[in-house]
Image 1 (cartoon, rainbow, N blue to C red):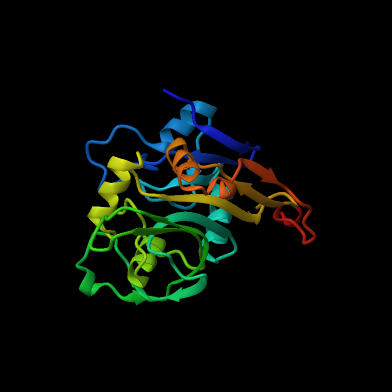
Image 2 (cartoon, rainbow, N blue to C red):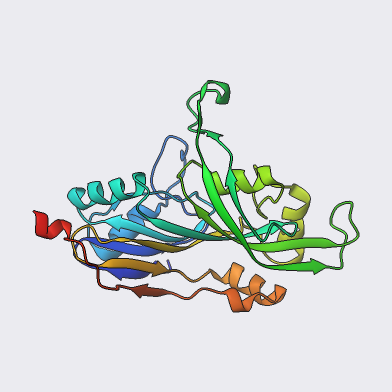
Length: 257
């Protein structure tokens, strides 16, 4: 089994590149599954790890885990209080707007109650078109097919928020079986060797919970998305694995203990 790509580790937390298709942890919806990111990471580093946020199974990219329950609580609070900056890259159908704030309330999708019984919660995502391409092929009713590379910055943390917001705006993410269009998903899978959800978490930034540092993680794309970007002429937008720790000026949690 290929080792996980660990982007950063200290005595308090670890950042890792989550592969597409890998569940983060066991759940009631994961019956029959035997492989999970949490267990693989624990076995690889030889330490117990604590999840503090989530990525959907088909989404790849940077995830942070705490190495103690205390740090997990601090990081979870930072995520829930919107103190974490997140950026994603998505390949969508259509040209997409140059920039826009998508402000559509969303019902929570927890699988335990009918959607009609779930309250609609505020949800906001900032999107920006980084590039676009027009392919001389007829995929649906149009003689050419247009696709765009979008950077998405979710300002809230609703389930499937980016996928649902882009779909509602009319620019579904390629490979999204639930919110996208199957004809375009098939075209990318069969003709462009991209049979996965084309959504990746490429950037996280937050104040370290116990050190006086601002943590900034950038995560490269996997082989599938990297090859696709080269094919579509988007190689200039490929992120690289990197960790930045510029100094922070406010008192750290460690100093307050």
